[in-house]
Image (cartoon, rainbow, N blue to C red):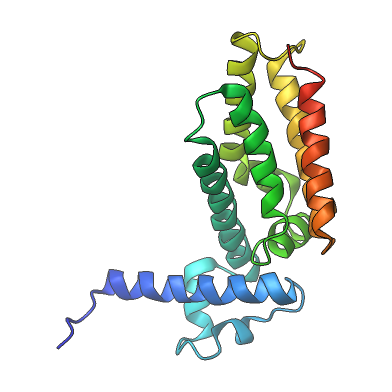
Length: 195
C-alpha cells in the first residue's frame, strides 16, 4: 500500500513531469514548434497547472534551460574535479563544455533554441556558475604563473565568448571531427597565453 502524497509532493511531481516532457519536446522539435497542449498531453494535468507552475510557455522554457545550464556546470565540474593541475583543469573544462554541444539532449536546446528565444541577459544569468568556474580557473592559473594575460577577467570573457561560438558551430553539425577541431582551437587559444 503506497502512502498518499502531500500537496507539496504532488506539486513537485507535477512540476517534474512537465519539465521532463517540455525538455524532450524543446530539444527535439524546438521552441516554436512545441505547443502547451502537446506538453501536457498524457500527463493527466490541465494547461492551468502548467501556467500555475511556470506562468507561460516562455517561463517553462526558461526553467528547462536553467536546469540544462546547471547540468552543464555539473558535467564540467565532474570532469575537472579529479585533476590537480590548474592548467589541465582549464583545458579539460573548456573541452568538456564543447562536448556538451554534441549531446543530443542538449545541443539544440542550449546552443540553438535558447539564444534564439531568450534575452542575452537571461543566458548570462544562467551561465554565471559556468563562467565563474572558468574565471576562477583563469585567475588561479595567472596567480600560479601558468597563464600570461593583461587581465584575467577580460581573458575569461574572451575565452567564454570563443567557447560559446565554437559550441554553436559544433551543435549545428553531426560531424564528430568538428568537435575535435573546436577542442583543439580552444586549447590553442589557451596555449598561446601559457607561460
